[in-house]
Image 1 (spheres, rainbow, N blue to C red):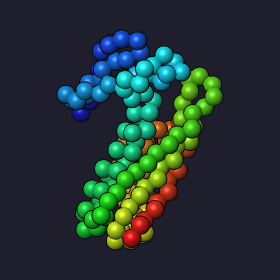
Image 2: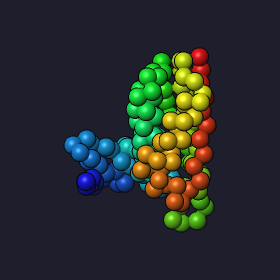
Image 3: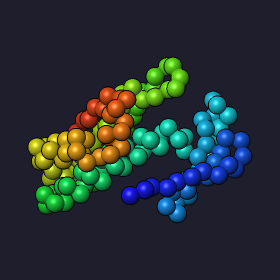
Length: 137
């Protein structure tokens, strides 16, 4: 299995990314010449992590016949001071709403982080990944 992606220069620090037919506008932050015309590439790494683990979690919960009323994953990462600036710690906040037993939520999060989420496996080689679970009835 091979994934393919690419970017095409637009102007300034703005590029148009393409992944499997989906257009993704990219731009640098204003501090380094960006104009806010797209997402910063490094931030998209965090989005990829959140999406990967969220898909795992919801898929496994459905197999357990547990359906939350709503579910979201928030993520933030701390960058090192020296270049190349990489994430040293990443914090995932899993937010469930509805009748989701904490034990099951913890089990599916652990399965995602330890077994299924490839983005987590890659980032875990350079960053500490910390998870927090919140369940609102």
